[in-house]
Length: 118
Image (tube, rainbow, N blue to C red; front, side, top):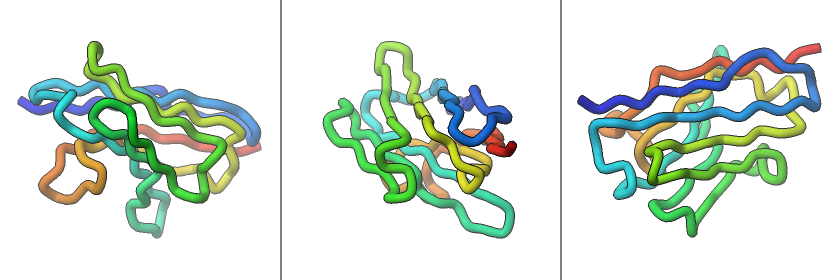
């Protein structure tokens, strides 16, 4: 049974940091690129960051470049999103998924809420 379980979300003030984790099971994690998406109320899901199978390739949305870092640990079947200098517009539910560009055929986690507010 495939599972992606996100954790690490929460509430933080502007300028703060959070580290999201996504633990994968039920598939060969190291064979898949992994991505983080986010969705805020009234908006569609937005691709935030992608990491290739061996971390050699990483891509970021322009809105998070220089502030967010995606990484993975294939030994732990986990992908991370380190978020720094958070802004109110980063407020969203963050999801991990099992591709560089995810769709309905990809594996998705249940999401973790990130709220940036003073």
